[in-house]
Amino acid sequence: MQYHTEHRRVLEFVRNTFQDDYSGHDYFHTLRVYKMAMRIAEQENADLLTVRLAALLHDVDDIKLSPETYKNKDRAVEFLRKHSISEAMIKTICSIIDEVSFRGTDSITPKTNEGKCVQDAMGAIGIARAFTYGGNHNRIIYDPDIKPTANMNAEKYQRHISTTINHFYEKLFLLKDLMNTDTAKKIAEQRESYMKTYLSEFLDEWEGIR
Image 1 (spheres, rainbow, N blue to C red):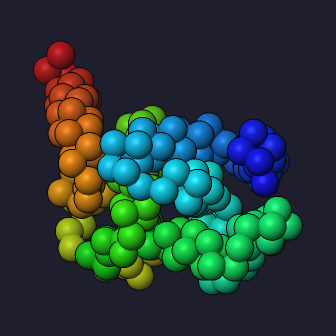
Image 2: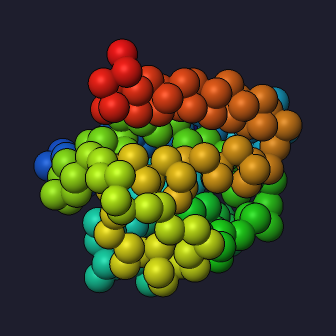
Image 3: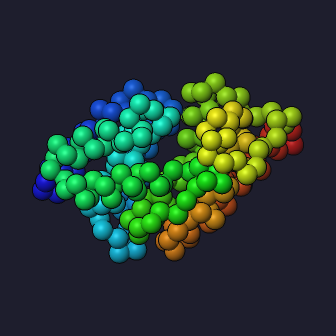
């Protein structure tokens, strides 16, 4: 595919896939991940086509959204084959998609530089998405009697039901130390600092201090 045609078609595919999603895994989330992944990839000298396609397709077979296609990445594979992407690149892209998700203590470092760029891009706008996902799944915002759970493996993390505020401790504050690239580490430090400031303000308001 020529760049502009390929780019337009994959954007259209992703938009159609997520047009009815309200969990925070929507089309605009994918765009944010894509833009950040490309920003990191350019700094880290990664293959831009691989990063572009992996970032744009990273959620189309997500286990939370499409468990029936998750194992074999059916949606991503079908799209890529339809648009004449080589089997070798399809294998690489599917491997990246498999590696980049947060899985608690079972989270892994992607094998390729391209995978590291996509994984590092996935922490964007964490506060807004946390509350959106929590509301969509009927989770309460906060209960001081429900404490965060530490050191969850992939299976426990996937099944775990908690509060949205606990999500900060159970995932968001763990992401900085999982960053792979120097570019993303610098970005993550700034974002974590902002999240900690936000959480401090939230808890002060909750207790009526402010």
